[in-house]
Image (cartoon, rainbow, N blue to C red; front, side):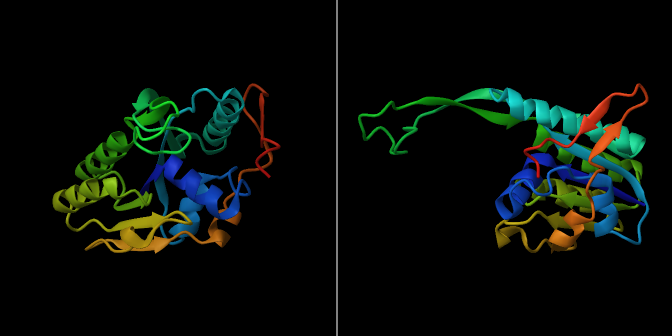
Length: 211
């Protein structure tokens, strides 16, 4: 039984960089089945945050999450973090630290809670014996401490790390864990139906932009 943990934005940006928006309507449970075809899926925990200052993108993201929950039921556990304001002390135009006549600071947003929540869930599930195999989908090296902690707590539990497309090779090897790249074929076979209806008849359709 495989329990999977997905760093939503890390996967999103990897897919976007490699394939634009071709595979954004992704069925994450089916993706785990493609990556671990001989394991039954216990649960897929998907960590993300709703984007700010982009109403259309936030609406598409919300539609996707609702479709994901409707289609997969208890097999998917969506955990939503948040973005917070962040002031950058660098010019937004030329990026030189205070060495130009452009505005020297600007506001942006940084994702909060997601990485910590994912790491905690991995370790907690290993301690509680949720499933017997752990699969992390992320190329974020900030996840390394959680992987190592999991290995200490459950040394006999297999751990795999699936790297989204277009990520750097610095996460290619983790002692005691199987590390591999997600192939395009797995993404193409793991797409949600174009439209999904929930029990009330509400329809969740793939955004036109995600094609």
